[in-house]
Amino acid sequence: MSTLNRTVELSMRAVNSTKNQEVANRVEIAESMFSRMKGLLGRNSLEDGAGLLIRPCMGIHTFGMKFPIDAVFLDKKNRVVAVIRELIPNRMTRMYLGATSVIELPAGTLNRTDTLPGDYLEIA
Image (cartoon, rainbow, N blue to C red; front, side):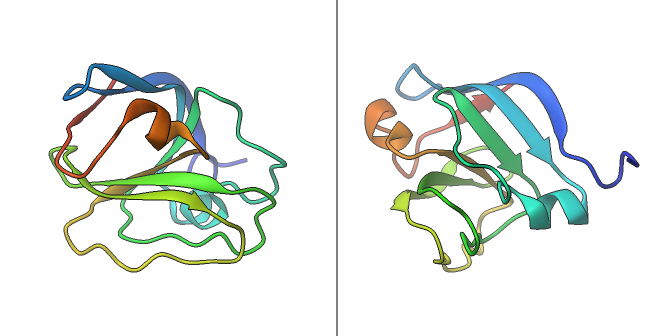
């Protein structure tokens, strides 16, 4: 498979530096058009600690997904623009014009980490 079409699997972490809370310890990156469109489709679940960083991205959908997710939209400085908790399958979010990326997470992650708009995430 070409590198343009695959999701890059890295051992990156996402930490809410405002709250000093780890949001995810295994973040994959989807940057190609194909990997961004595919997102989490075809998976049966998303394990605790996992996440998918999609960039660029201002809005998402869960059409065809099998499980609910949390989503945290970030601006270019990784400031949280919006949070969506427990987004169930076959729904879509609105477009967040200030967002440049989103991290899709297991449902319940944002409540556990108390991640809110205005917080900053470090992704490394």
